Amino acid sequence: MTFFKKILIANRGEIARRIIRICKHLGIQTVAVYSEADAMAPFVEEADEAVCIGPAQAKKSYLDIYKIIEAAKQTGADGVHPGYGFLSENAKFARCLEQEGITFIGPDAKVIELMGSKIESRLQMKLAGVPVVPGWDGSLETVEQALELAGKIGFPLMLKASAGGGGIGMTLIHNPEQLKAAYATTKQRAESAFGDGTLFLEKYISNPRHIEVQVAGDHQGNVIHLFERECSVQRRNQKVVEESPSPFLDEETRQRLLKTALLGVKQIGYTTVGTMEFIFDDQKNFYFLEMNTRLQVEHPVTEEITGIDLVELQLRLAAKQPLPFRQEDVKKTGHSIECRLYAEDPKTFFPSPGTVTKLTLPEGVRLDFAIKEGDKVTPFYDPMIGKIIVHGASRKDAIEKMNDVLEQIHVEGITANTPLLRMIVQNSDFQRGEYTTRFLDKLLMVNA
Ligand code: ADP
Ligand code: ADP
Ligand code: MG
Image (tube, rainbow, N blue to C red; front, side, top):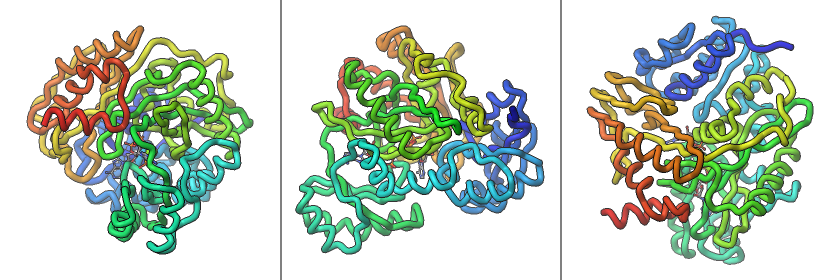
């Protein structure tokens, strides 16, 4: 059975380090690619080889398909791991690698395309019998058409970019005037962020919870789930704290959700790890939101409760090995929480680049970090500098551990969101597990 000899990591920061770590353990050589701004970054030093692929701007480095493929050929890599963000959901990248005989560690280009379009993926899920958020599944052509459809679906609504990601390209709409005002700007934003201005409409689920299912499939046609993750602590529709299991689900709803997610995965013939995202209303009705056909930022909480390394699993599946376990072998133990540490102001969420002059981190806890003390946080990329992951026998135990860890973390030289993370973990609604995606807005209003 062939496995990889050398893989190139088409990413940076904490996820590049995390992939290097497991490759070292598995005896796989690694190649880092880096921009000029990242020349001194830990992931560059930790990889066996490193190739500079251009200037700081992502478009000229981490998003430059040609340069990355050249680096892979030059170093003789037999696989490319895209991490998350950047080219991880880029069908053209996957296709170009395939043409070069280099394995893309992810799904087929066709599947990326299908699930990269929110409109297409909603249609696929409907075919599979997976409930989707009520809305309109065509692409909007004009603002007049949008207004007519909005009247039928009812307000409030989400005006969404079909190609959207990272919480970008969606606008909450309460009435026809707002729709008129937001249509052109949302379209423009989608065009500039994703090169695709296709918009559609979804009913806005009020006070929702974001709960997603980690799934995996192999080339032999088997599919499994690895339970759910609760990701409702969000700012600007982007996750900040995640946990597994979800405190919101009773066992009956959980089983129904997991089963439904697998229906969707079977429908598309999925052959790697991925995430089915769902939104829950307060009646425990759930609807498919989108599928992420890649490793997720918050994948560690799943690893903590199942003891399964998701990157190793990704590598094995990409090498066409069958899933190494059956559904009934996937067991969960205890509770895990992840906090994303951002170089950003905890109140305004503005990024805070600079040199980290002091970084005190506790020991004995999983820290997936991008930087070390003395390193620079540049303004060019996502300001997440690290993830803190704890595991406890119970949710209460995990919260206590996280609280302890957060008390011991000290960052100097930049502004970090540590105070916000502490406030979340110490909040009584969070501690009771009673929170929705509106939680952070409320928390910040109270403490303004
Ligand atoms: P995940 O879905 O893995 O939990 P997020 O929802 O936070 O991660 O972000 C989705 C993806 O968008 C991630 O892969 C992340 O790297 C990327 N991303 C995050 N912030 C931005 C941004 N400001 N611009 C573009 N992409 C981003
Ligand atoms: P992205 O691709 O940017 O991750 P998603 O469709 O996954 O976009 O939505 C991201 C977040 O935005 C969700 O977790 C949720 O908080 C909010 N959201 C998206 N769609 C809706 C909706 N129809 N109703 C309420 N909230 C929504
Ligand atoms: Mg999403």
